[in-house]
Length: 138
Image 1 (tube, one colour):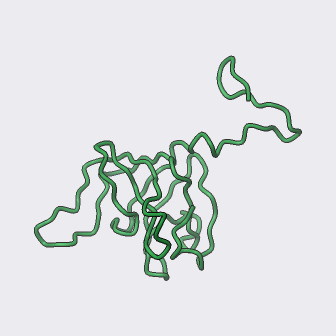
Image 2 (tube, rainbow, N blue to C red):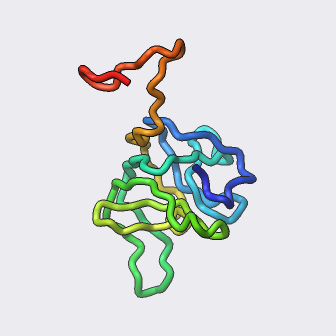
């Protein structure tokens, strides 16, 4: 899903293995862009797991605050969904802290490690079950 402020931007869904980069779009909000086209926002589903190439950094809101989050992995979440006029796209870090995606520094690269289980299509092209794991089927 992409934040409400990215609805006027061309988008595509994320796939496992995608390399995405934080970008400030013309709508004045940050999101993930596609490496093949920086004008395309890559939309993540809640629960998508990401691995960044470096520790995640956020924009410093005050001179005495730090911009380092000190983690390279995060899970995409949507927060404050009861209020449609604010940003929802966020990252949850291993210590439980949550940072809005729009407050991350531009130019950080991440890889989509895993999509949420609900996003995995369990039906084959002819409607047959697909093997999910050793010995399990849908």
